[in-house]
Amino acid sequence: MIVIYRFSDKGYPKNKPDYVTKRGCILHALRVFNGHPFYVIADNTSDESYAFLMEHVPDSSNKVIRTTLSNAGAYMYAVKFAIDTFHDDDVVYLAEDDYVYTPDAPGILAEGIAISDYVSGYDHPDKYVNHNEGGPNPFIQDGGEVTRVLLTANHHWKYTNSCCMTFACKVKTLKADWDVYMKYCNGTHPHDFPLFCELVQHRGRRLISAIPGVSTHGETQWLSPLVDWEEIMNR
Image 1 (cartoon, rainbow, N blue to C red):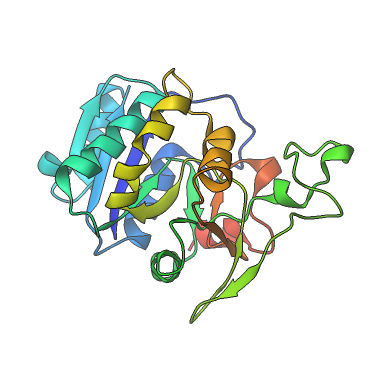
Image 2 (spheres, rainbow, N blue to C red; image 1 turned 90 degrees about the vertical axis):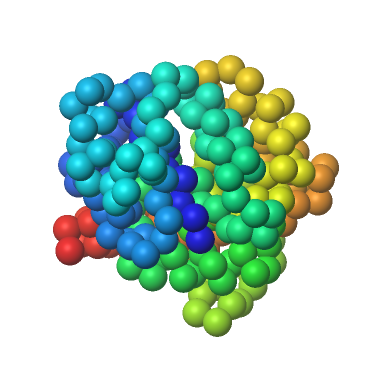
């Protein structure tokens, strides 16, 4: 699995736990994905942050790429970089810069890609909040989404309707779905929910998420449930 990690000093204002910081998260990800090729798209970073990345990312002169794009622009750059650089059957993990991972996350994600087109390690809590009670996902009722639960060697999964812009897939999938990414990432912000709804509902793509999660977005309100993420981050 090849990691393409999008790092930026910019971001959206969100309430995050104290243990979730940009630098702390990438150091954590480097430990978890140790042994996997690890590339960084350093988008809109200060000279200080760029120097930090160059110090800590292995083979940084070849693996850290500095850009001045946007959230959506950096995502599209990462996709194009993967398409131009790697083989069709290579598995890439496109990662945002504020995630926490369980130690076994890389292996679990690899299991998932064997049964699905797209794989998310994040069990998003919004999939359990009814839309008519204020939940943001319109497909959620009676405490969940209509789905199917799957089993791989070491983990359970469910089909899901959407995920964030952090996921694993094969390079050939990126090639085939490029037009959909362009449709929803043509501004500064990637519109992840309609993007994945179109891929799942109209293109027939399979999207699964781990249950329980092997990763979490580092936003206080939406931490993946049933895992002590602070304990993991502080190991």
